[in-house]
Image 1: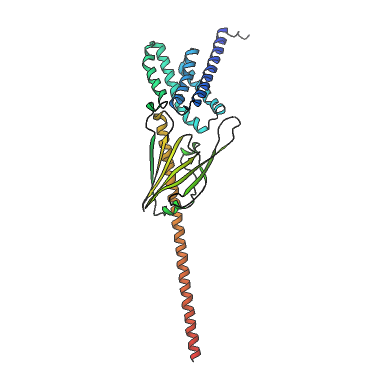
Image 2: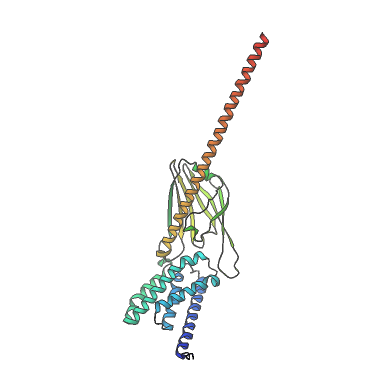
Length: 339
């Protein structure tokens, strides 16, 4: 005979389910409010929302382990955020560690507060508030302008010819950039004179939203500075990285031995201590990819120039040989006529 279900256990389960749903609803409501206030890229979003989930669940449900329950609910929230909020997979990949970290911190704080009283809350609450407030106003924002560079040996490649031609982009090898970042597909535009443009099309954005369709992405650059061994492209339009950062400028400087690519950008996401290193590393990988792309293209351009020069030389030799042969024939014919 099966045992009768414990009414108290059933009540706890129903209460826990209600609290979880309430926490997720509160997070969804917070997202809508932050989106309406254009705060979806600030720490209020990336720290505040997981904190709302964790605090609601841990305090209202009164679980045996606040840490375990908050981590589980954050997992459910992340799984639902893609279809409900239309986020892309790369956004979830980079936001997930931060969400889990905040949930863990809140869970630990609540566990400590239960054992040591309210004094712990008075110590930790200001710290959590400071983390949440970063980026919400100009006074709480950290410096956003950044430059990353990557240098590659040219191997004698004709870098200038490669930069002047229509870009041809090889396969992306960086494991970091292949996590879900857009990859260049086609390009158009050539020349290095000031005002020359390049338009590059990337893989479309595919969100996890229900019924979402792929969104085309592209970037337009214009030459704004040109000098011996240097060309600077200004980013005049960008639907590729605009959700993650603002790319402002791409500078190429080269000598006979090295090519350096420098990317100037503006960080748009907070908190800086989390997204800053991620963006710096990602743009560094992108700069390295561009440097390798144009040194490789420059090698091909140099090989093509050498091949054309060799063909011209062979043609010249053949022409001279033909001229000499015709001259010899004429001499022989003249001698025969004289005889």
